[in-house]
Each structure stands twice: as C-alpha cells, then as structure tokens.
Length: 144
Image 1 (cartoon, rainbow, N blue to C red):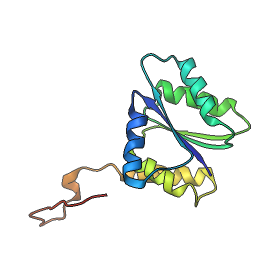
Image 2 (cartoon, helix red, strand yellow):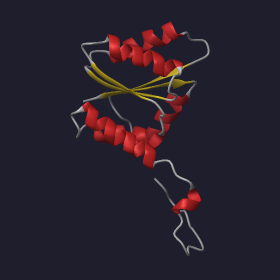
Image 3 (spheres, one colour):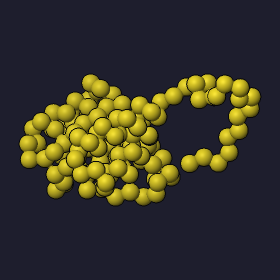
Image 4 (cartoon, rainbow, N blue to C red):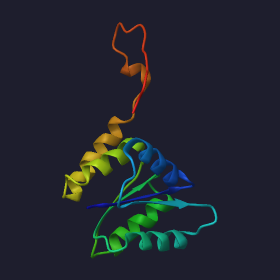
C-alpha cells in the first residue's frame, strides 16, 4: 500500500486529515505533519524521515509549490534512492480523498498521481458555473 504523507504549513495537515476522517472514516498508512512556526526546515526533515518508516512507496502531498514543506519533501524524494517517493503541491481535499481511495487499486505510483491530479483540478469550481441554464432555485441538503 502506498503511504500518504500530508505535509504543509501550520495546522493544515491536521485539519485536512480531520475532514478526511469525517468523510471517509479512519484511514491507515496516512500521516500528517504540521510545519509550525517553532520548527526549522531541519526539524521538518527529521519528522518526515521518521514518518517514512519502512515504506518504499510514498506519496507526499504539500500545500505550496516552492514552500518549505515542498522543498524538504522534494529534496528527500531525490536523496532517498531506495524508495519511490512522489511529491505533489496544491493540496486540496478532493485530491486527498482520491489518493486514499485509489491507492489500493493502482499499484503504479505514476498512474496514481495522474488520477490524483485530475481529481484535484476537477475539485476546483465556481458555483455559478455549476448551474444549468434555466435553473431558478438550487437546494442543498445533506452532503457528503
């Protein structure tokens, strides 16, 4: 199974994993690492290396391209040659849910990334574009 590590600024990882659990229940082999103001990039690197454990196939989801979490993860993805590590930026809940549900069915990490990136992009929308022409009233009940 692909290990998923959510690595981002502030409490974003803890928060998005809380949302994931609310929607999809408790998941295994997924870790969130909050990058807090009190931490250095070395602290973050140490926490990330510890989170790898024995896993050989790892997907790291980060918030910002070029941010410290992304940079630390990217550096380790190159230096940890005995592991298959992929790093994505632009973390959103749609991509996290897709990664969690698709990782058991897709053994190739490259194919998993394609699916996750597609879901991330499709999960971004503007409400008025969702309305069909002629819709006069939209009702939202329930939800996920």
